[in-house]
Length: 106
Image (cartoon, rainbow, N blue to C red; front, top):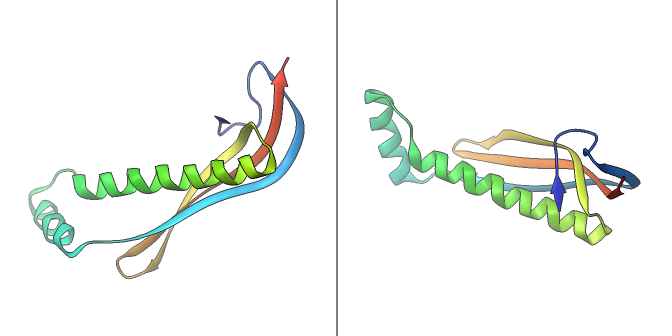
């Protein structure tokens, strides 16, 4: 599956647009991570547990979007965007979306 943030794929021609596809996940913080994060906030530096959690969330959301596109018969997704939003205190949603298309070599 080709995944791009642009509206075109170099060397490919879009032959069919199949529509919007998306994937999301909602993650809650972990109390143990919050303690480490509070300490890191005092001394400075990267909060690696949260970095890892967000990376896993992105991958899971992308995997869900790809599965959605495959159900439609797509072999590429264009105009991909990522969005985050706070759902409640300590929980956030990560949403990834794009346009599923069928492409061929030029």
